[in-house]
Length: 128
Image 1: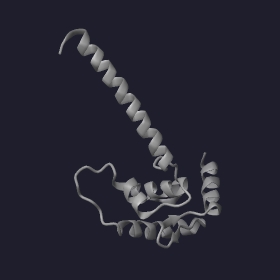
Image 2: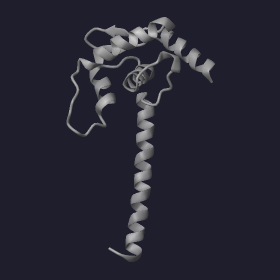
Image 3: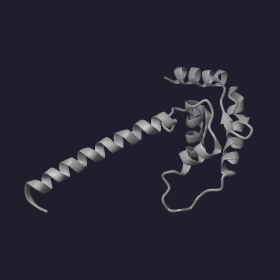
Image 4: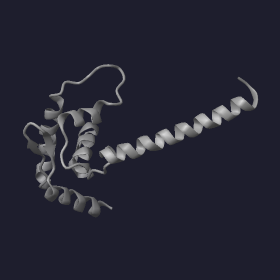
């Protein structure tokens, strides 16, 4: 394919790609994957992802957290679902000194209460 048809098709595909990338960015923000986290928490990249999801939702199931962590992995190596428990345990240790708690909702998943979310938001406001 050469000439004007090729150039028009390239322009169309570029526009579609830009729209798709913008939509992905919007969805990730909605899920909480782009949620700012106070640096003093010392969370790892995966813990930051989990924390963002918990801050953006009333609660998050194990399945939702697994999806947030591993949906972009294409090599087929799936992590064990228990990895979420490990991350939550380590996060609780890091968050405790700041008065932020992650609650277990038995049979459903995890949550950060509105009270503790307010603590995080206040800390973020102070960092700004």
